[in-house]
Image: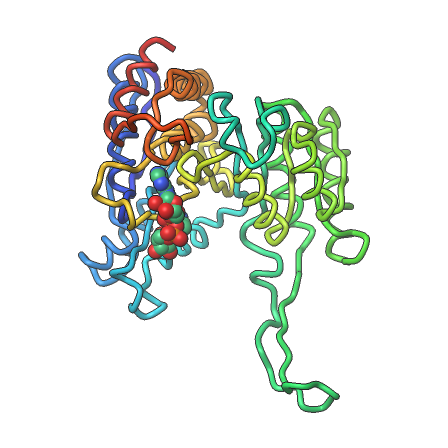
Length: 373
Ligand code: NAD
């Protein structure tokens, strides 16, 4: 029996609890058959927490999230909560988790399973076998920089009389810490990082480039580092995505690049993510794992949701928080096998049609494949 890993499960709203039920099947199987041991606690986040406690995240749940090895979240939100005050909207629960845990490195893999290569908007031979990891800085940059705001600007020849301001600001420390995350991850993969900014027109981009290079030269000399302007990077991502392994970039460019990369691989129901922070006393980073998709109110409660994004998010937790790379590989192989066998939830049905399986059946099939992986 290995060490026990502490995991806080926050299913959230809409399809969140449905897809999380399938992850729990995987966890139960790993505990029963692979000698892994998880110390699991459950909590509420988003609308479900608002319904129970009048807040999208209680202090108690926040404290639990700070104490565990990893948090796994389903999704938050839904039309029921649209008219709530901004301060108690479901999304505030998620934002508080990210902020209070100081999760500065957002990892978004873009992996194309062979069986789904025809789902991409790009040609099969461009995306087949694709396996990229985008590391986006998540807690600083232009989304947070001061000054910001919309002000009157009546002193110039300005039709409309207003000015909108945001500030792109990065400290060297903020750049170095996320760069270290990217280099650490590259070491576990193909030892290649491409850093993207706009050093040609932005001082913050020059600093970004210099600091990333500094970290590489002083701490990760064995990792191959290249630099690219982010506009060219986005073009290269759709032209020849296979040239990349780890892409490191800032908050704004990462927002754009990761959404574009997501579309290379097909359905929203397939995309996992991880957000990592500083290492804790046990050496593992603070970590939140969640599917990229939202609560999908249009299909909630109907057994139609694809649980794979949430299951692959748990595979990331196995790899990055629990040092269980072999179990993560096995789980990813199980997903690949099920897809190769033609098992599809409704979102993965191609023009050829067929009968989709339910959320629960997809989970069962993945667990069955895991037993053979
Ligand atoms: P969404 O991701 O919930 O859904 C977009 C479309 O993709 C829908 O048609 C949905 O049915 C489909 N879809 C999403 N996940 C799927 C899955 N696993 N399987 C099959 N189909 C899936 O985005 P939205 O509709 O813009 O937002 C709905 C709610 O979710 C909103 O309240 C929004 O604020 C919230 N949201 C939450 C998160 C999060 O929790 N991280 C992210 C995005 C949106």
